[in-house]
Image (cartoon, rainbow, N blue to C red; front, side, top):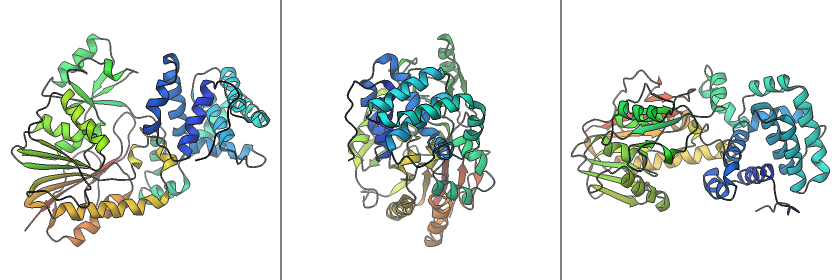
Length: 434
């Protein structure tokens, strides 16, 4: 792993942000970094640190597009480039006073060992303060995606591409799923109102609420009593597409961290529910979530295994396969995906999906249902995967999803990310026929 310059002084907050941005560029996910790093930062600075990291990543390729023409020659320096993007993000996208943004970011470039190049950072950021409207217009017009991904999305969604690119640059809302075994949605909205917390009911999921202000999740009413979980509204549609799971044998494949497992237990009483995932650490969170939500775990089996080879000891009535995917549909929540995902990943992921589908399909009862889900908006992982599946499985029949959400595809329905609403999800419901 690349060594960072050894700082001569204690790093300021912007320099700490840049170190995180560099780690992401080297392939580390934010999920693996953020928790520890936030703990090392004074509490008063944590919200700003979080905003600067996620915001800069969200605008990364748009910032890159407006920066390149300003350089007389390529920098070829990840640290200084990161300082530039961070500085421009503050000047163009936040209310941080320009003088503070410039001063702190230039200082960061020096602290990280690039005193000689700090003048370039200073000059470009000062120019941005003089030409703010022009820079902001260019930022808005940039598609903000790596070129390979932009080309794929333009091919898949030619009519929606411009809106889609803008949507992917936004932040996603904080959405809760109300645990109706504990409290009704209207009652929970009243509990929020009593604490002057701005929130509204969602339209697509009857148990979803969007919180319309900045909050600490664990401080929300009913957190310890299990009144709610955090889950995207479009992800919550899973349980609405399944009926009659009481007394059935159900598999939640690729289950961690357990959002769908919990939702199924909130809504149904299956005879047996198997939560399967290859990641033992993430499966621990399934148990923790079920315990906090006070859900009956007596009929739950939590299994660490590979879904491409795992064998059930009895035929399954229902399989929920939230398949491994590129996660392009959730870039708003995980902006590091812009930098982490590579074009070569897609074919490998499509092949993995195929292997899991093939293995699990054999274990479904005749008359049983498989619900195929991804949080992707790439057709290769969704509609095209299903076209191939149905071509190879004459014992498979699509159960059309009749809904007022998303777009009907050749098979299944696709949701794209929407401002103030859910992320990009794909659903296809399949019945096994004799």
